[in-house]
Length: 81
Image (tube, rainbow, N blue to C red; front, top):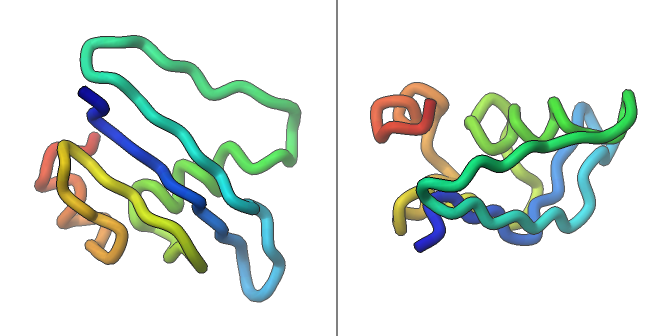
């Protein structure tokens, strides 16, 4: 079962698009790492997944629940930490 699913996420800052159609599936009980060079969008992706940035498109699903439009506080309360 996928604990976290990121589907077709696009996001950025003040009109500057950083993420373009990112897809990622994290399985429960598996260790997953996110690696990349400086400036490729790792922090932007995590900020979008955690609700600190609103995605321009796409969805974030946690434990089968669509959390795309929930606040960061609500996501943390749902167990996303």
